[in-house]
Image (cartoon, rainbow, N blue to C red; front, side, top):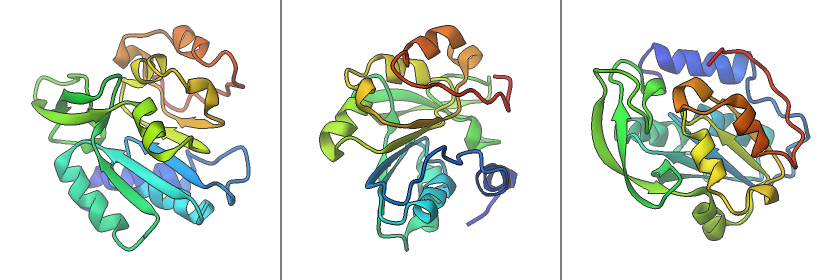
Length: 193
């Protein structure tokens, strides 16, 4: 279900350049978390490479969730979790940039962004509910540091892939990487944010 140019951009990132190509075999994964699922293309990609996995697609923006539902409705192992992944459970302010759902986040990034409250959930709460995932994909527009820093079980996650936006989120790349001192960290600087 494609409605705008940002959808095409995501399709290109996910399926053409394979931005989320994994460094390991994924066919036997049982559980995947997709933080910042947007309209579902990464969830669909992970379903293709790991068809046995239950995929929890976490997305906060209501109109994006509507598109996400249309895109994944026929894939039984993708479950939509309508909330913002955050460093706290409850309600948070979310900012929608109307020209591109890809720019919407917990951070006010543009003067035209509209704010509203959405449900929020922590990574630890999702793990308590579903179990430890084989993979977490993260694309949450600058909130990465606070989400991972406030997890008490980060060290239990075997594989994390995604985008990190240090300038946008107000944290340093060095501080972010230090959170993963027990991990092998591979950086790919496709986007200088």
